[in-house]
Amino acid sequence: MNLQAIILILVLFAILMAFFSQNKFDYLPIALIIGTIAVISMTTIWNVSQIDILDFINFDTLIFIFAMQIVVYFATNNKVLEYIAIKLIHITKGNNRLLFYLICVFTAIIVAFIEDLTLSLILVPLIYRACKALKIPAGTYMMGMTITINIGAILTPISSLKNLIIGKEFGWGFGEYFANMGILFLITLISTIFLMDRFILKKEEKPTEGNKKILLSMLDPKIVIRSKYYFTMTVIVLLTTFILMIIGLKPAVVAIMSAAVLLLIHYRDTSFSDLKNEIVWKIIILFAILFILSNSLSFFGFSELISSSLFNLLNDNIYLAVLITLGISSLLSAFLAGTPVTIILLPIFSAFIGKGFFPNPIIIAFISGVNMAGNFLPQGSACDLLTLTLAKKYNVSNLNYNRLLKNGSIFATFHFIIILGYTMLYTTILG
View (tube, helix red, strand yellow):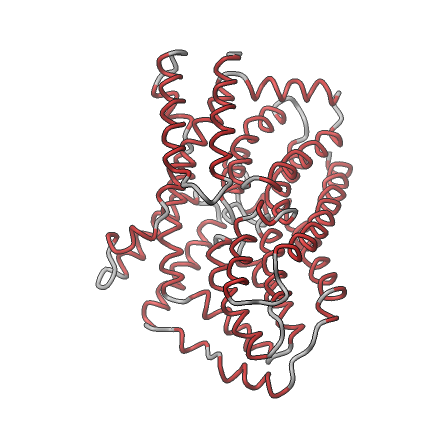
């Protein structure tokens, strides 16, 4: 174990997280400086080879981030998700309870395949327009969306970068996620929708029949389709992408092929140079640096030290191991962005599992903690902050920071109890 190297990397990581978690200052230059300091220190002081440093970086994840941004760009530009959302609103025929149920269920399912911020950017304006036509406050419907987004994020390995990283580390694909997380997803989603309906939505005003007719006349799904050819081809590519991932092909390979196909389909009106500004390059750079910092900690012995200490403390108690995994991942993810938390904790829990514990309940607790803890504090979830920003933009009267904080923390605590009960029962039956 190299104590000096571990201390330096931890300090660098803390500085990076401090800048990443605020919005006043661009974190990219700080990330570049920190990455440079880390690499130079490792190569000159501790003689770590450049090949080893490159091995620290999870290139599959970076390729997936890059390619999926292109896929999502075309899905958004061709209004695929917007069409589906408007179609669902029409199905409700203005029934506000059915509208709420469909928003929550649609959100929870779609976010298992599409990045949460993109989904919020599409759904929040639609929810606002629908509620404005019905002349009812939009806040509860937006709140239901943002709370269920964090529930849906546990269902697949591609729902978030957190899941992709965890899935790659432990060899969990779609089958493993569905088998281990599916029941937990259903229990949490159904109970959350029921409780929100029973204690929040039921007390709010209902739309009149006249307002329902106005809504149906305002929102026509067909008007969002600008090109039927591009719309159809994008839908086919999206469905093929998800099917190939579900049957077990590597997400990074499928994503890059899908991005290439969509660029070829749109070659007449869109080139890569046209959409390169739509790609968030700095997030790719940030994650490369985070991988270097995180895996260098493991390289210098920090992960082994923590996992060994925890293992000795637990004395082979799998139930306590699950509780600690869920507690640590939830606590950190409530205050910090979940993906950096995942990257820093992954080597620790991976070494932890390597000590001989039954892996599945610990992995379930880890996935659930880093995803659903975002509801504890709005600042712990970028999606929550985006929803609040848009709600303020549209002057939504019944959604602000305090209301989301109060209800989000209540449901996050409720979810924590469900996850803990599920993992304990899972351990008892299968452990």
